[in-house]
Image (cartoon, rainbow, N blue to C red; front, side, top):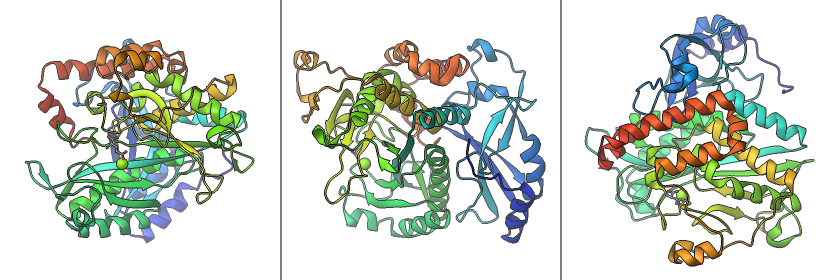
Amino acid sequence: MSAVQQPSPEDVVATLTRQGVRGVTVGWVDNNGIVRSRTVPTAELPAVARRGVGITAAFAVFDSHDGITFAHEGLATPSGDVRLVPELGGAGGRGVTVLAGQPGLAWVDGRQLDPDGGTWPYCQRAVLERQVALAAEAGFEVRAGYEIEMVVAREGEEFLPAHRGPAYSANALRDVDEFVVRLLGDLEANGLGIGQLHAEYGGSQVEIALDATDPLTLADDQVLVRQTIHAAARAEGLRVSFAPVTTTDGAGNGWHLHTSLTRDGRNALTGDDEHGLSAVGRGYLAGLLRELPGLVAVTAPSTGSLLRRRPGYWAGAYGFWGVENREAALRLVPSSTLLGPDHTNVELKASDASANPYLALAVVIAAGLAGVRDGAELPAPVQEDVGTWDDAARAAAGIAPLATTHAEQRAHLLASPLVRDVLGDDLLGAFVACRDADAAWAADHTVDEVVSSLRWVY
Ligand code: GLU
Ligand code: MG
């Protein structure tokens, strides 16, 4: 798939040992957006790279509360083993990173294989690799970047905000100066580029924007950035919540996903048509738009995501697009004189940390490229806040709210042939079972309990 050579595990071990690395953590993201991991002694890495670490097949049906649901037919018993194999970089992605904030440890993302080394249909990384390969077959490279919103709190059982606002203010950020400086250093040392950092709108919120790169590297980076942020926070006596909603009131944490297509080294979305789009750009945006209900069931899938999806919070509550419209689920960020012609990208607002980033990127790429392939028709952009319109006006414009209940979201998930094709029947079945298990948990608890149960898990 890639011309990059797999580095020899023995060479990796020699380098890590020279740097004083004692253990390598192999991470992967489950169907709830939770990062799970196994840490192996550095010297074991060559053996682990060959045969993997054993993990239970049931990880595909873990729910957000560490329950295991056996409702999915393919994984209905406690039996079964999967091999978690570190992806050292040969097939794309980031490879091994020595963790600046966790001295003595390195990080690498893993792929899941069946015990004979064959494809494990529940491996989320493989799902994204397939879509990247299909994009390449269609003549495109995908570029993608994440905005990462988080709430920073003081360490402790109670929820104590670490800054007091006001929104976007230097004064707010000054409350967490030491964290900011440490984080900037650790991000750089871990090879993670960010465009900028600021105090966000919500209570005690901070945001960073991760640099755009290829999808596999971005998904790996999105995992590494969490590890980097959590470690920097811990060192400063802080805790960070990436949950879609941290408290029941106020702004949520969006992890907005920006994507664009490149062909022959140029941004293929940019063109001379209206809004600075090419025909490819129009098709890409239209493909995302028509697929939104099923798409967001993967990119913002959790019970927390449903709570975050409220009008007026710039969280993408309605299925429409606009040019630089921050209330739209899809915001076109056009090129401009200052930004240059290669800047055009589409931001998906209905995206958050409870998504598995490999699956999220996979469905986004597939939906956009299907729109390009079909020459899907793009309606006119909407520049207003459609939440201020009445139902009749929205219906006349063909704009519907995205799901806010499990039942609606589940129906959308199952009604999308594209999502089914991208995830495959097995993984889709497990994914739906996880959503059902979370919904059953939520039905037995108050909204406050749901919110606090998910606050620290991402
Ligand atoms: N916090 C908002 C969200 O839940 C987004 C605010 C913004 O546009 O940056 O997605
Ligand atoms: Mg933001």
